[in-house]
Length: 372
Image (cartoon, rainbow, N blue to C red):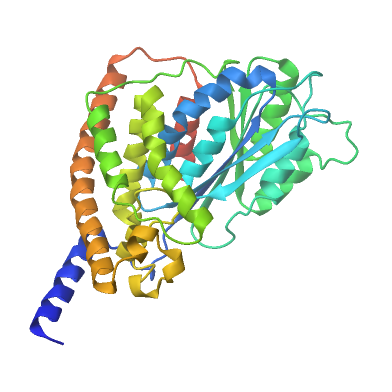
């Protein structure tokens, strides 16, 4: 090896060191959270609030478990005769994809009072792909306003499903929107049998408090610059998804800057262990930094056109340049995120104690149950 080549290798190693992932010898803890959500028409207010606060909920998990591998999923349910009975978004670390699916969700349907709660819980406990081994916390939030149909012969009834949840070490919480007494009785039973918490909230999900900060716009600008360092790679659909995710922040910022700032804050905190600029993989820069991929091992057809057209040496230089830029930008963003967190904490302390709401109750429950 020549002196120049050795110096380049040492410089490249030094660049990687501050952002390297923890050793796989000590497995990271895993936190898995699934929301089982009634999506009939009466739940429209709560669902709109959930769209705005999903990032702060994810951040609450991360703040309690900075090194955790966080996976979130969603089971949507209505009833027989509606557009669907259940639909699901599998447990995933790609929170941006989950967020995009949540944004598309509209509350519709319903009619008779009970809903297909039994089938939804069965899907959550038995059909989502929960991690089976390791240091894992598994939590379900059932969120709805109507009791289950107990007259559907094909359903596995909730007491049976909850017995399986206990065997799988899955905590099941029951969040009741509204004040229906028949729902309250069943939700209490579900929470008690699920070793979880019964959480009553207003029908519309309660007052969602959104606090804008002096740091939001600068955070969004920096995260957009970080997104500019992303190099999508892999099969065409994965490259397309990664490209869409790099644009997602700007779209959200146009209508909800506080939510976009929440998203950027979460991704920045994740970057300290994952090196990600977008969630869910598909970024060559993140994967090279993390040691998950070697540039020279990537097939030409899996590279974006702009990188594929370069000779090997220039490809390496391009990746190194984006890595260096991302490291600097992430350090700047981490400072802003810390200042934003302090500002939010101070503003919350000044406000009168708010009534219960979906996001605050879920965040408080997660913090308590993750300490178990």
